Image (tube, rainbow, N blue to C red; front, side, top):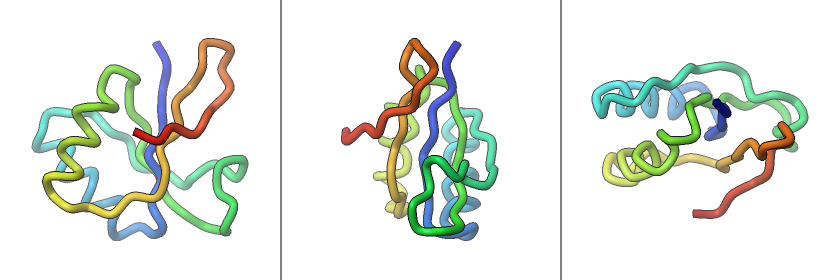
Length: 84
């Protein structure tokens, strides 16, 4: 199974997003954004399973949690930015 990333500018919105997703039944792991994905210095991300991305984005939109970008992991393991 593949893991995807939702990135955030700072820890506060990432923590808020994690709480929203947990309440929605989506398992999301908070971590620092990998350097390969973060072009503007530090940042935080939530890692989640591919099948959880759409429900996660819907829950975050409903809760009005600001996010930065979404990256999906391709079958070859490469991460690609996704604009839903």
